[in-house]
Length: 311
Image 1 (cartoon, rainbow, N blue to C red):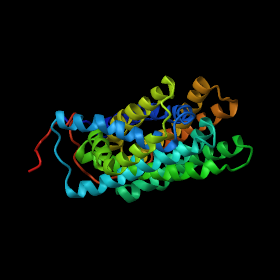
Image 2 (tube, rainbow, N blue to C red):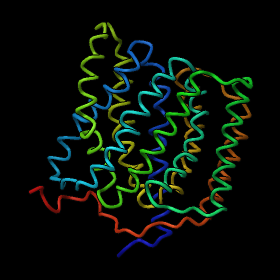
Image 3 (cartoon, rainbow, N blue to C red):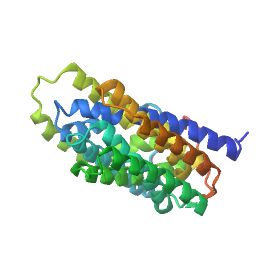
Image 4 (tube, rainbow, N blue to C red):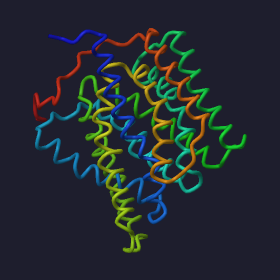
């Protein structure tokens, strides 16, 4: 029995929220690790470590090979979430606090919605755009206000990181409808490996050998959770509920990141955060009701065992 559209949307939101909760710890743990590791090694090395898990996972579950057209989309996913976002966000964390970075990335849901029209063929209604822009604008205004009405150099990198992630999310969410959510990120990691492995080996030369267990624990989380497991839930959620709609759940990531930054790094919180969070929650609720036209495409079942092997 096929789930109804409303059930698929609800499942999409729940899986999206799980992915966002995992991603919310990315900036705080990156902020800790870059104190002892270079941004280049941290951002690219984590993708190689994730690929070391992704490859055997695809092999053991006998997943089918992507088509030539799929490989083109996987290259876009890899450019966005395997290369672009990790490098840009890790570099930004050497310039601004994790809490500030989490707020600036509040523009990510809007970037994802925009990219969904390019890479996923979705057509959000005017009502959806209104609430998407309103929620993102609230977060950006909050970021500027918290920054003392100033714009940091790291903010430029964060904006570019948001654009990269939005591109990767949209392309990955669309491809997940035919290839499977967790399969997409695993294949993307392997597609990027000819680029990421040499860079990692070069960047590893800068390690002192005196890095703390805390730094390596952060690295492990970024590799296995932020770069891999989080996408298992996130891509599936985007495939079920739609890239534009489920992408709005990312508005909550800002406040989860702020909470994590307070709990882990001792960075400050204030009443403005909670007021903005309430408004953002309302924007997500109303955007959920707005219409988004999607291309019809059958979803694979999970865990989507191999249907065929490459000839």
